[in-house]
Length: 227
Image (cartoon, rainbow, N blue to C red; front, side, top):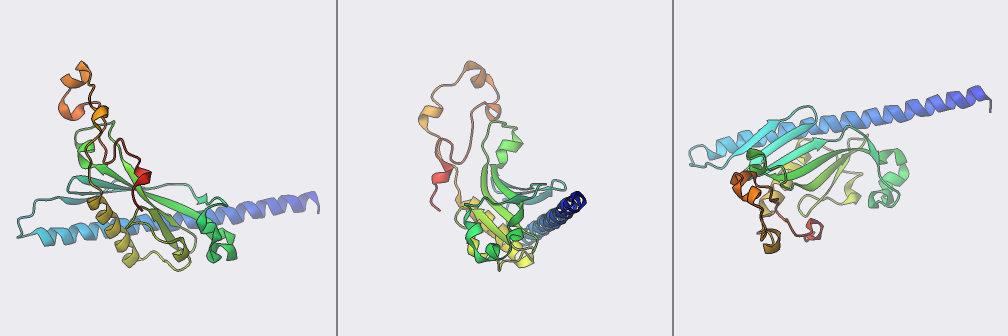
């Protein structure tokens, strides 16, 4: 093979891989926009549900920009954040063992939308030391197929990757599952030892600005929660 042929081969590889990642990026960005539309619809449906029922519990969607969306309900906030890069799974990941990926390795390149759960008061009172939790990750590939890594209600089987297409119905299921998990993911009393010592400076601070971390599982290993 001549030097020019090697260079041409290099350029062809660059273009092929670049186009693949651009397609995955566009699919992931479209997926986030679909999730935003779904959250907006949920918010509208909730307004209709609570009208006349004397319900004062908030349920608010907020579009935070091109790569972020926020959903507030009761005392919780869900943050949906799209990563701007495209990733491939490690060889040891379970998804790499599926027939869907073995048939075409390029299907393993995915964009990611992370779902975080925060306490709404953490933002309201600017408690910068409070803890948020990654409760799910949505992976979308070039075929617009997806799967979700997450806790309990949120996580789907990797074997569904080859069949699951992101559309309004599946987006609604993802949002519903994330909300349900968050509602059932309760705030636990922090361990006594984590609060038994407080400095004078902390004590004299405004209560909601104290440098004492608050999180739903503070002092416990979130990873150890039952699947």
